[in-house]
Length: 384
Image (cartoon, rainbow, N blue to C red; front, top):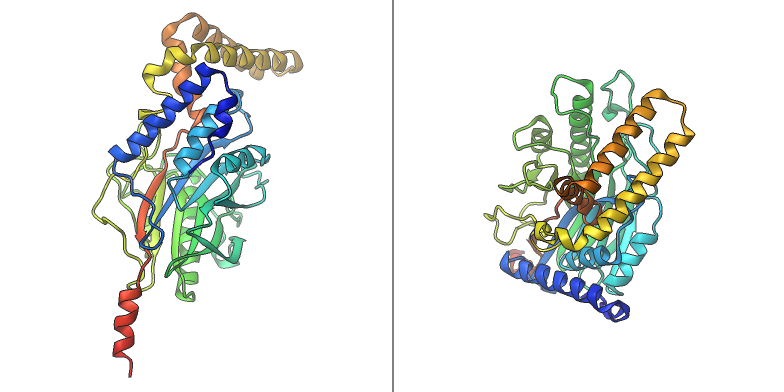
């Protein structure tokens, strides 16, 4: 359970608001029948793109302490979770880990400096050490020459290098890989869309080969920027033998897109889901946190955010001589001024602002059986 003792030091109004938010999300986990942690029977595994965690490059303001408590509460429900969009400065991650407590640890990559959409991001895993054991194997995935991506005529690696780590929980040994696939374009007729599909195909093809030579089950998760089931990107996973966990609702903020995926290439009889027919493994945290009806509560914070964002835009205007950039900055300031004066526009700003406090992606999860002792004993009886 996360550490909440520092809440005592807050002003009563702030403390009570955060406590009420934590109580709502905890009740939501129960209402949504999110699985309870079990030390020996099952593993709760997930993936979550936490939007720009946490460099404030879009000037909506850094995440508040309140948001850190909410993120920690959500992550604490998982035994191991892949995280995308961890930024250069690890201080916010370390603050999050402090709230999560000594039972949790993390492994992250170095920053991706690629000029092809790397965005100076890291990929990583947060895991409960009581339940999940790091087996000592970790590495960023570099493609061999024959799998290099050549959409634009040049052979390239990934925009953001995938990351794979070896873990074990109970009897279940698994190699856990995570990606943040290049977005590009939604059109299937452009090189930018093809590059997205080619990246998915490349990582799935690479891990397909690795899985054949491994004694571990392979789990591939992350932000694939897949729009829907049956799209070229989705099919690239399945044609390489990865079984995907189907959800009837999406993982973006309004749950209309299927950007995030959990998929498997498993050893025979070594990967079984608890409740395999379930189709709603998405945590829609905006039902409990930063709700639409909480808008008035955060209105003063929104106005402070807008003022800071406006100040940055004015500073950039004073420092640029580009006519096109000046035009864009003037338009931005006009929109910010409109948000201050119009309740409707301020509400629109709130709906975007809250995604920089939590995320514009929702966590996905699965529960996997990890106790194969009965099968093992039965197998021993059959040995000659």
